[in-house]
Length: 92
Image 1 (cartoon, rainbow, N blue to C red):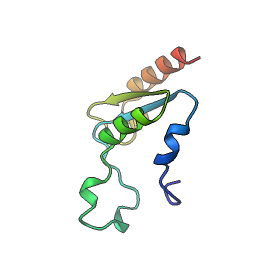
Image 2: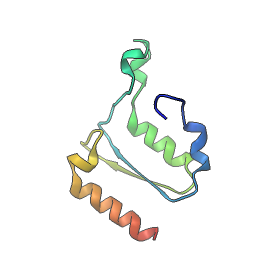
Image 3: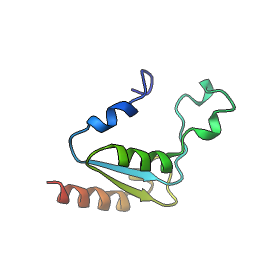
């Protein structure tokens, strides 16, 4: 999906409960080298993108993890696992 098209329009169509775990330091931008220099600063703001996605996805739960980047499941596995297990227990 990263290479083919934006998926924002599809987010409201998601039916299952959805867990979004967002590291608040995440500023990852796939394809950064192809973006115009004046646009790069506005790309990859995952804390804001997470909030927007959570409002758009009907059954979304947002977990924001401070001081963590793009891979919270590797950076802070205990916090990630606690969020995931709690989510699964509530949505089983």
